[in-house]
Image 1 (cartoon, rainbow, N blue to C red):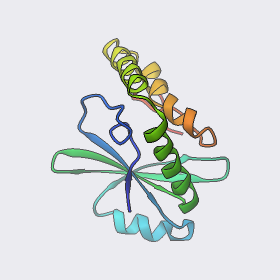
Image 2 (image 1 turned 180 degrees about the vertical axis):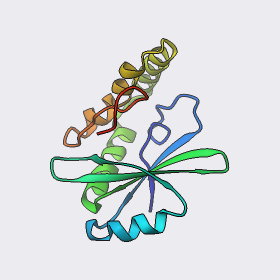
Image 3 (image 1 turned 90 degrees about the vertical axis):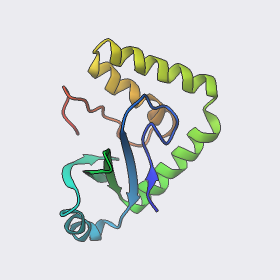
Length: 142
């Protein structure tokens, strides 16, 4: 089952219309997955997840909502779900408000690189074994 792996799913979102979904997929089935997605989604990038694994990121729009779909290895998806569960149970309401307020301030000030970095702070805190490289309009995806 897909899981919301983005800021909306962890209740740190600003007013946006995009969702970030993650799925687990066997590495040896990636070509088949990409072929199945090709008529529905645009391939964006392959991004490093850990030292020896990566995720495939595709994008599509459904009912006016932009959706990024990350296909992680099955093991990485399990780790990501554990991280999301920990964020859900261990991050306080006050922490969520403070984090979201800083995101708002950075975005409002046009500080896109700082905003892209700050968005990932929570993920890195709860899942340091993943490669959390910021991506923004001005910095390339890795």
